Image 1 (spheres, rainbow, N blue to C red):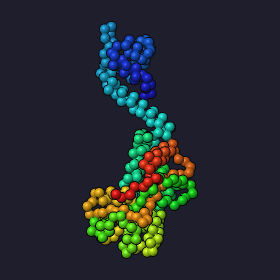
Image 2 (image 1 turned 180 degrees about the vertical axis):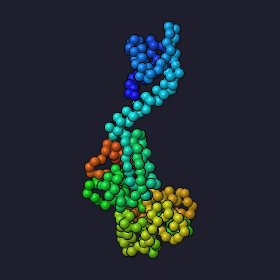
Image 3 (image 1 turned 60 degrees about the horizontal axis):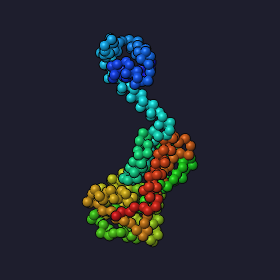
Image 4 (image 1 turned 135 degrees about the vertical axis):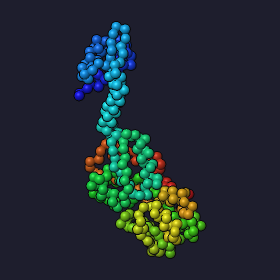
Amino acid sequence: MDLDPRLLRYFLAVAHELHFSRAAASLYISQPSLSNQIHNLERALGTDLFVRNSRQVALTAAGRALLEEAPIALSALERAAERARLAGAGIAGTVRLGYAPMAGYETLSAIVTAVEHDSPNLTVIATEHFSSQIAGRVLAGELDVGLALFPEPMRGVRGRPLRAEPLALLVGSHHRLAEEDPVPVVSLAGETLLLFPRELSPGYYDRVVAACEQHGFQPEIRAFADPPPQAMVARLRATHEVGLPLASFARNAAAGDPGITARKLVQPEIMAEWSILWPVRGQSEATERFLESARRCSAERGWLDTPAAVT
């Protein structure tokens, strides 16, 4: 049945007033015109909605039923129209975001909060991937936006630095370096460093190795076979190995576990670089909105100015 939404609005006005003249006045139409519209609605539904006589107007059983459902139907229609309008303006829609695991401890939540503030009707579907995988997934159209550490340049994918964040030292509280603060990189000589395999994040791995080589030693590295960052904490708690995660993750881990200690890493401070990625072609208005919010978040938090270390 094709039902003009205006007829439902006319019906609601009469149902609330139970008086055709007052309802017509509230709708800025004439009473005869309103009466004709209500008759049209009743014919379309095949039932009377009002009992009318010279003294009163009352709802029939069918009218009472429609009074319960009509506001819901109109609200759904208005919601659909508003979502379509917002989507056309790039304020609504869906963005598929791929992020590297350690972004989930601070960076991701800050960006999503900014997006929700700027575009409350925009839906972000966030999935976890390793940094080495993200640019390829953006290029393939599987992701609209990526958040990666040291992403490799890829034709067809644009990137922009979003945050500079230092690495920190993370050890079990029984480790000798737990008593040192800050910890110079040279103190890592002779220690076993627990790092993600190079193929998962080449830039991160190479930055650590380069910092150690600057101090004249080749680091002893154990590739972290169980990739989720949370598993690193369990391993460090049980061994004398040393983790070098991002400072935001180190703060989170140490705050929630007395068996883990986070320390600032210095001389040199090893910096990690988060970049936001998007396709050269085919980005939606929703993606543009997301990128604008992410850039604003970065600027307001000074992510590219004064990186926060472990304190």
